[in-house]
Structure formats: C-alpha cells, structure tokens
Amino acid sequence: MSAPLLEVSDLAVRYGDVQALWGISFQIREGELVTLVGSNGAGKTTTLRAISGLVAPSAGAIRFRGSPLAGLPPDRIVDLGISHIPEGRLLFPDMTV
Image (tube, rainbow, N blue to C red; front, top):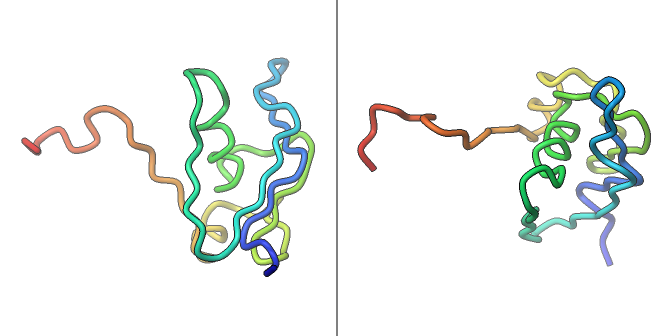
C-alpha cells in the first residue's frame, strides 16, 4: 500500500477558549476521492481551514506527501497544490445557474 498523500493525525483546533475539533485523524491516498460529511457545527470547515493553513491547530499533525504543513503560511500551502475554496452563499451572485 502506498504512503498517504494527506495525513491528519489527532488534529485539534481551538477558537480562543472554545474547542472546535478533538483528535480527528484520517489518511488520503493518491487517487482516492474523499468527502467530509456531517451536520452543521460538526467541524468540516474547521478541518479544511486547518489543512489549508487558515487556522492553526492546537494539537496534532497534518502532513502532505510526508512533510508537515503546520506553521506554513496559506500561500505556501497553495503552492503545494492544496487550496480552500469555500462554497458560501452568493459566491457568484450575478450568475443565473
């Protein structure tokens, strides 16, 4: 089995005094298609924001192709091929479809 392309281990994220994620772990291998599914407030966006460097983990590790992402600025993470594109409402407000 090949090494993980993306590996998240025991990821925790805090927003001030509020803990948003507790010990999330998963691996994604090259060629896999993965979806994060959960109810509102489950931590999907926070997980993606941590991977893309938009929020700093309070614990755990994020590795891409075996190298740690923690501490890298978002623009450097984009240079590696990882980006965060939020869906959000009215992303394209002038489009009809």
